[in-house]
Length: 322
Ligand code: HEC
Ligand code: HEC
Image (cartoon, rainbow, N blue to C red; front, side, top):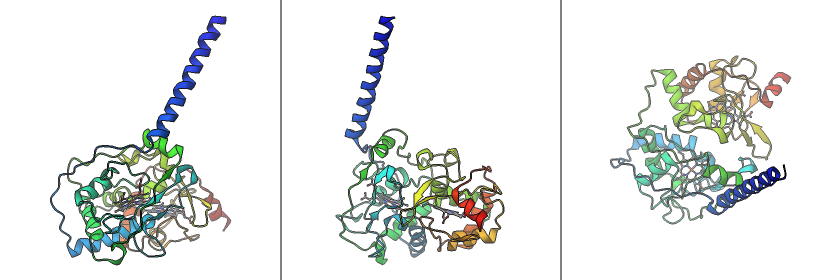
């Protein structure tokens, strides 16, 4: 019996030692580095059509994080809508400044980062979404806009703020949150005439609605979005501009907790203008004002085909109370 206790004691001490080693490893290693991805691609033509499309995409998809609201430039900001469990994180300066922005990045390096999350220095960029399912055409349009003469991307010498990730963030990027691989073949968006397929593309590839509208950032699956826990059924905790917790609601068709009773017109209003049947939608829900009506309708058609999940979020109570 005594011997058994001794063995158990040693085992326990061993386990505590291993856990301490793992914790030290995570703290010391911090944010991991990887080999820089090398996409093979032809030079991107910065056509006026791409700059226009890129302006729409960047304003819908990147500006909420990268825009300094005081200067109206994409020179970065503190991400105060992330729950504090992730630490204090800052979106980088992505203006054309050669030192503090992306002026010296090549197009291939930008493609590499958007697809995989790995920067030109090999450091894995955290919180920056993976645009692995965005079409090549959309990615090229984003880059054409970043290179354009538009005011928000002109060189701005604000240094990007170093990240202050929490232990949880460091642990996540050393375990479950990994870079996504470069696509191995061309990524082409489905035709808008196939509303459901096009809607899926908009939700997982272009606008990444599922990033916020699934169960939790920690269990999202960038490579196979539908495998994210509680796909599109809400639950992710965010903060409003005044620091109040807000939970992204359920977008599946459950009639009580989701959008089952919404009409297409109500949905289009909510997404494009931030006006839901129960009042104005707060940030961090983006206002997709540049999204066209056809896109919003396609997203609605796709959401109707997503497996329905019952998942109440606090907002549902507010709806009932009104
Ligand atoms: C959820 C917020 C968020 C969104 C949305 C977002 N980014 Fe970022 N981005 C970040 C953060 C945070 C970093 C810095 C990460 C780090 O240093 O670990 C970053 C880094 C970058 C960098 C690397 C810059 C550098 O010097 O390291 C580029 C380029 C970039 N983002 C471009 C984009 C583009 C283009 C879009 C839209 C298609 C976009 N981002 C959307 C948060 C975001
Ligand atoms: C940055 C995170 C984020 C992204 C990205 C995002 N949403 Fe939201 N969304 C939210 C939050 C938070 C709310 C709750 C706002 C409120 O209640 O005031 C919300 C609310 C909504 C609502 C209202 C639902 C209800 O029950 O009231 C709809 C509809 C919606 N979002 C659709 C979308 C679509 C479609 C996309 C992609 C095109 C999208 N959202 C992208 C965070 C996000």
